[in-house]
Length: 316
Image (cartoon, rainbow, N blue to C red):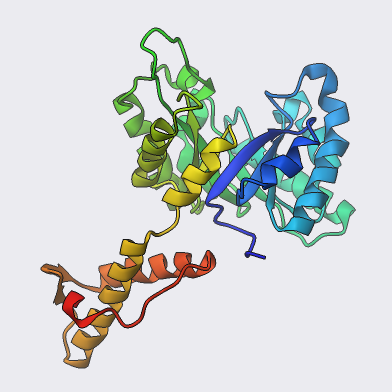
């Protein structure tokens, strides 16, 4: 069974009231499920969805899949959501419509109380911040620093395949941008989120693939590549078919693994000669490249990928 925990490479939304969908969702091999108590659950079914979410968390714990829950805003049932779902195996609570640090602190206190009630270790449950308001989007670093529980921010990369489709989301509405296929209008916002999240102590920002034709996996792959390049550590799917795409892109490929092993070997050889910058494959590399290579190989080991050593001499 693979190690379960942060950072999560692939996440998949599942409506919490659709308890029967959880087993099917696990079959596509996500690192974690986001059990949704907010937008995808009809208002009349939200209360009944809470014990179903708790049961799903217990199931996910037994099969080695991470469990997160997107609750409702705290003032709209989120408090009741938290008290119903905090239990062994819950890795994080996703807080939507986030505006200010007061909401983060309130949720952190609530989680501490709920963990005590559930008899699980204090600090077990992380906060995934979803700043879908103009205020929240302007204050990412402060939100991240508001509690040690904040490990992640969740945003979206919104594709607009059909020029006539008026397709948006809460973040787009809050920021006032209109999504395009190229996505230039989103670049500043999501890049800022990744940088400020890390600066505030939340190292694992993730983004959702939204707006693509669900059947067009090439389009999903293009968006997932953009998510990774911008600096997000994982991708969030709203359709099961996108999980395989995210898994593929958010783990090192064979070439990256071989390159990283070569970097380590070249740097070790250089250090033996008193050098701290060496030439490798026509490039000059130094300690910064070493850190990236080590991180790449750590990720490869996490997913049980083969790591060649040593690299053939011709590649040094």
